[in-house]
Image (cartoon, rainbow, N blue to C red; front, top):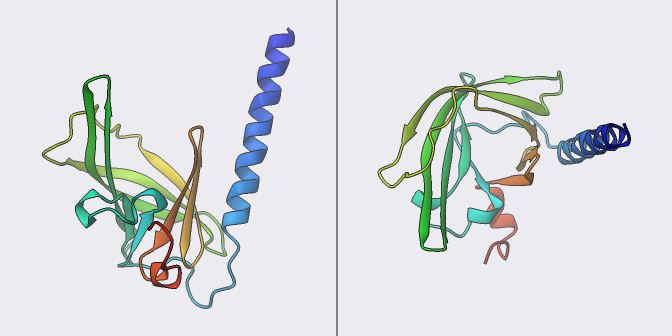
Length: 158
């Protein structure tokens, strides 16, 4: 009984933390649409990587987009390479257009991909500001920086 209450409490804390983080990421008074299309939002961990090794979101004005993911891990003699591009359809979930949900449409794997296939139930909730996207999951938080904004923070990722 105590274990169930503790697990329920942890789930509540995680849920509240996720809501707090997403609401903090979404505040931006930038003029115009908060989501910029036809430009990359690059993952904060890959801004210094070569363009073919970056992970990013790219939105189109017709409510479609792509999520490019690349990651290379080597551990105990095992090499894991994630190299794929998910095509998705997206929908805003609020009138302020500060949150968007992306739903799987298709996937294309790169030549070096050697991991599991992506599920057709792939989806993600992103909080949107003019220059940054935020994503929260059980694995933590990820931030994606608009490619034009990187020139305003020139020392980031160097």
